[in-house]
Length: 349
Image 1 (tube, one colour):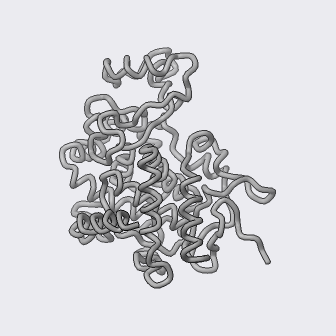
Image 2 (cartoon, rainbow, N blue to C red):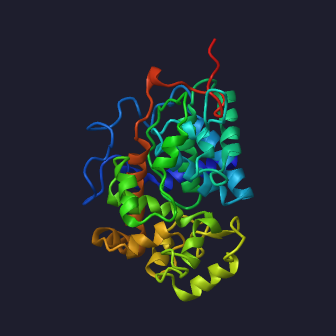
Image 3 (tube, helix red, strand yellow):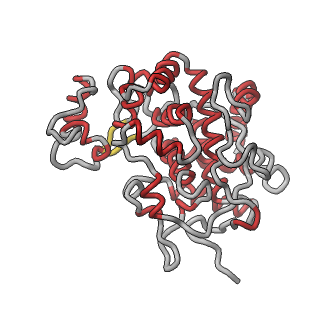
């Protein structure tokens, strides 16, 4: 626990000047409307929400994350991805964590999620520790958000003041998960539409795509680029040739769908801006990565170039955008509950 406190202290010291400029105000030149719901901050969400009821919440989360990431560095990206897949489906309400029951059709079985999203066991461990320390206090939705921030920071990324106080949904929505989660082969036009549907703009799209600086993807997610990009039995011409051959050797035309490759092979476990540098070189892994540069949108391409050249700018925009995303339709007060077990709704008494 002592080493955890040292890590937490280092995080807060290193992020002191970041949190002052990265928290709620938009970055200079950034988009207006930092909050997609209403005209301002969500009433009730606050970084100090658990200050008196569970002040040790973040310390508990970070201590478990440290062990999980040390055991498997990839889990940091998986936990960060859970936040995206939660917030893009009926808001940031932990609906993604619900298992199938007679009353619930789980989002885990939606096409973008099945055999893909992971990290649920780590969330279970975190939630159990939070329940032991602070019973019926910290929601599963906030647990996801805390795990996403902790995973980012522990991977070398920026810290941000995280608004807290979300409640958990009593329902999931597999149909909406199939509709709202962007596929890896999405065109730039479709990506923009997916983000606009959530109140997120082009800056958010490019900045949040930078989450792919950590993690891995299965061959099935990008095999179309290697062999049949335009349904013509030809590869994607935007793929850099040596990178294409590397991918093809790992992902044959037939079979190997579950083989995995790093989204950012230069520094796959470090949250940095090398993701954007690779895109400029034609070595973005997913179609949805590379089209940020090749999709013929000057603003988006300009942001990719700027982030590749200026990591602090990427971090600044990323923080603004992930706070904005975390404010998508949170449940407040009696509109939701605080689940004891994140996999199922509380039993009515």
